[in-house]
Length: 343
Image 1 (tube, rainbow, N blue to C red):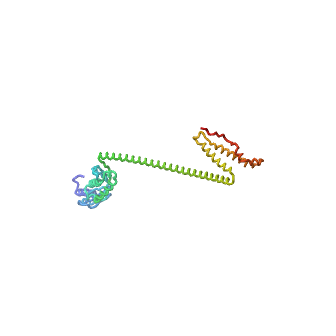
Image 2 (image 1 turned 180 degrees about the vertical axis):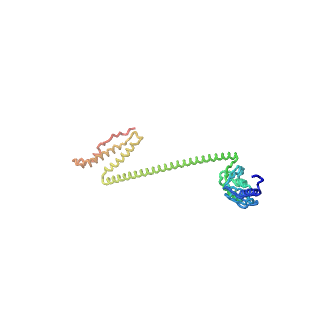
Image 3 (image 1 turned 45 degrees about the vertical axis):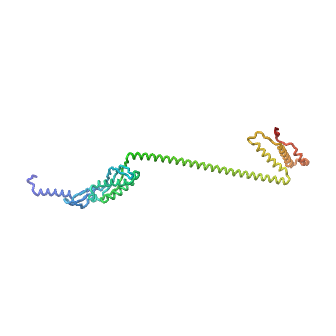
C-alpha cells in the first residue's frame, strides 16, 4: 500500500492492534511449576502468582521476584573452628532449604542464599566451639541436629524451612592426625594385650577347673574303694567270728580236733604269707613246724576214721578205738623240712 494512500484510520487500527497485543502480553503471565512470582503495584507487593496461567493489570502491576520454591542446596565454604580444647579444625558442609512463603523470602531478607550461608557458618563455629575434638570427630549427628535446630529457628521469619544441615569434612591439623594415629595404635595394642591376658586367665581357670574335677573324681574313687575294702573286711571279720563261734561250740561239746584244725589253719596261713614275700629267698622254719604238721596228719587220720568208716567197710572197733598217742606218733606226710643251719 502506498504511503500516500494510508489514512488516519489505518494508522489508528495498527496502533490499536499493537496496544492490544502489548496489553495481552503484559496482563497474561504463565508461571512455571516450582516457582512463585510476586506482583507489585506501583512498587508495593499486592499478590502472589501460583504455577499456571495468571492475569494481572497491565501497565499498573508488574512482576517483582521470581522465587524458586523447590528444595535447594547450598555449599557452606570451609572455615577454621577452634574447639573447646583449643584444637583448630577445618570444617565445611551443605545446607538444604525450601521456601514456603515467597513473599517473606522476597521482602523480609535481602540475598537469601548468602544470608543462610553466613548464618550457618556462624552457628557451626558456635556449636563446634563448645565441644572437644574427640566429641566433634565422633558425634557428627549431634552437631548436625543442633545446627539444624538453631538455623531453622533463625530463618523461619524469612519464610524458609531448613530441612537438613550436614557437616561434610572435618580436617584436623597434621600433627593432631599423627598424634591420633599413635593413640589409636596404642589403644589397639592395649586391647590386644587385654584380650590375650583374658584368654590366658580363662585358660588357667578352665585348667584349674579340670584339675579340680579330676581330684574330686579321684577322691570319689578312693572313697568308694575304701568303702568296698571296709565292707570286705567287715564280711571277713564276720566270717572269722562265725568260724570262731563254731570252734568254741565244738570245744564246748568236747571236740578238740576242731580246735586243733582251726589253730593249724591259722598257722599255715601265716606261714604262707611269709613264704610269699618278694624279698624272701631262704625260708628258715622252727622245730615246732614238724609238730604242727604232725598234728595236721593226726587230724587227717581222725577225719578219715570218722567219715571213712561210716561207709560200712567192716572195720573193727579196736581200730576205731586206737589210742590218741599212737595216732599222734604217725610220721607226718608232706615235704621234708630242712633243719635250721647251725652257726
